[in-house]
Image (cartoon, rainbow, N blue to C red):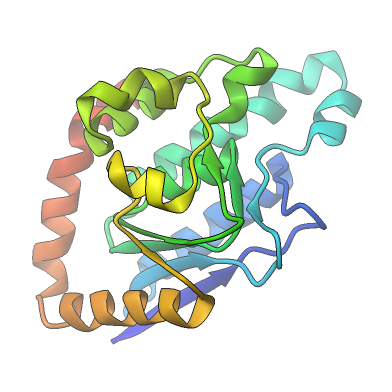
Length: 212
């Protein structure tokens, strides 16, 4: 069974635009349809940023009549992540801010590099409220006492993110991070994919109702 590996490489900060999000959406659609792939992995070889979220300079240069469309693409992308019913693993290899945190929480298994990596739903820090679908998934992922702090843009190191349930496991280096991924994939590949898909559909169905 094969895993589709997506190495996020958009720019120096791995920031996201409507165009790059649509590219990632297309990759998910292709992977879902292609029977040779049983899972999807988001990672990045960028030495500092997994993804620094929406590209601020791009947002500032977007005409007012296109702004809602540009900023709103991350919500549509998140819905695609939840509808993607094959297993998704994310390796948080560096800063995961805003959209980077969205990709992470939308994944089924989340592993984070210790050291300089950080994760935060930083949209609120620049005046953008978190969509209800993001909040629903956060509330399903982190331990209840920490939901408000996460939604308020708190910044977490790897060990802290694991403590609150936002991250499953951490590793000291990229080699250790990949070992966690391979171990999980070895386990998942022993389970019939159809069973994993039906289970994931049931898990995400209540959140996806917001998009219907």
